[in-house]
Amino acid sequence: MSARWAKVFQENRIPSGSCATPSEIWEVVAARLPHDRTQELLDHTLACGECAHLWRLAHEAQVEAAREDAAFLRPVQELGRPVPRVRWLGWAAVGAAGLAAALTFALKPRPPEREVVRGQPVGAIAPLTTDVTLPRSAVVLRWTDQGPEARYGLTITTADLTPVDSALDLSRPEYMVPEAALQHLPSGTTLVWRVEARLPGGRVASSPPARVQLR
Amino acid sequence: MAEPRLHDGPPETTPDARARWVRVHLDRAFSRLLPRELTSSRVDLIQTAVVRILEHERREKEPVRTASYVWRVAFTIIADELRRRRRAPEDATEEAQLELEAQVHPPSAVLPGLGEALRACLALLAEARRRAVLLHLQGFRAFEAAELLRTSEKRAQNLTYRGLADLRQCLVGKGHGP
Image 1 (cartoon, each protein chain N blue to C red):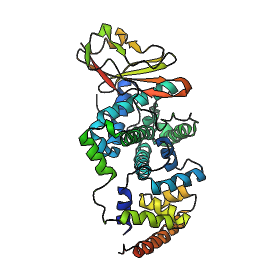
Image 2: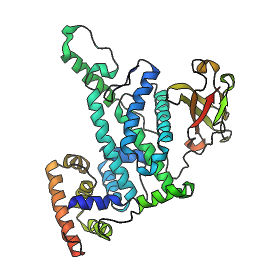
Image 3: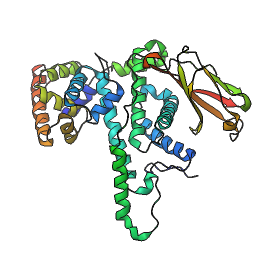
């Protein structure tokens, strides 16, 4: 009976009222928000089918992520640290070090993640250099100007997502990729790039990924 | 070079190896979480996720070490995109719009009117029972509901059972009997 009710309840995806950001939904599902706020957001899911849907997605993601983390946080080797090769240290020591490393990471205070504010356009920057083939000596990426006070950050990868180059704190809406960063890439390589702008008042705008090909 | 296994930890040897590790976890996260209505945007959304992770690593000067962070990025990107599309339907193609309509307004519920009756009855439940039942209907297990409700697992179970009984009674009263 309750399975049928759950199915019916979950069919509703209609948004309603004032919703939390995805990051806040992630935090509440992880039981990391104050009790009052948790109750408020939970009550909201009764009327808001969209937020209820996002609660389920966040829950599913956290269950799966915890399973994956639990699998690889055990041994030190899988934390990317060298495994002591001296046998007498034994797995007990390895396990203890792994646990300590995991705890150190888990307990380290992290700065709050940047929020995407509801209603703010996502992908407000349009890439102007896209779907073209360029010589590696002249890969100049341009995007729509966001005003004189904007500061841009840029990330470039290959199509298989290997990092190629990045730049920070650019004041002009263009960037020339250094030839040295491209010299190891074969002709025909597709570059994927995306830019993010920090705007006055702390707002952030970003572009969708754009692609160019190396001649 | 061999592909990383799903449960491998994040390698720190080369950027290539790290990129592959991130990609493996992102692929899995998007395969699991991406709603049907966003399937056509999968590649772009994964690219956006990769770039966001790289930007995070550059900002923090520290590599991402947990799958949890990768899944969180996947979740927030999917959630942002879902909201963007639902609030800007004029950007959607006709096909995508029809798909979206079908998602938001499912053509046939299990029983006509049951959804409305269910929400109306939930609203009438005592607060603590309603919250426990909401979590139950959302797929949370008792220990997870207990954590969110700041109570014991046993009490969370009791609240759920009693709330479901109240809900059944209310639905019967509205003509939705067993």
